[in-house]
Image (cartoon, rainbow, N blue to C red):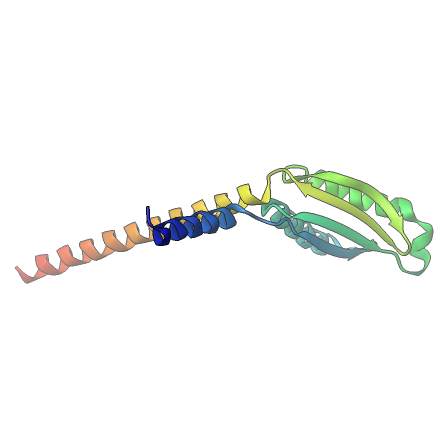
Length: 150
């Protein structure tokens, strides 16, 4: 084997290993203690999306003024969040008070590389389906136009 071919194959191998490698990112979601239901649902959906993508999520509740004397309400809100996203991830660190903030960290059930591979597969499947639909529409359009001419 010549040296050029060896370098080429080593480069291909390195590129393939980088493609399967993924760094887990920690995302942050911040909310207040007096959050409305619709706003809470939006934050919950974002947490689910991040966990489904294989990222860790740090949920932070800000306490303002008198709210600091009621940390049990923050624990209750974070417990509700933990129940809601249990299908997508697990509680990595339980609620803890950190000055004016209460922090809880969720970890994903699946690894980042696995999530990226699934996303890549869904994308290629969608592209194949779109190509099939395009081919079937173009072939049915051709038949309709030839039938009208005869």
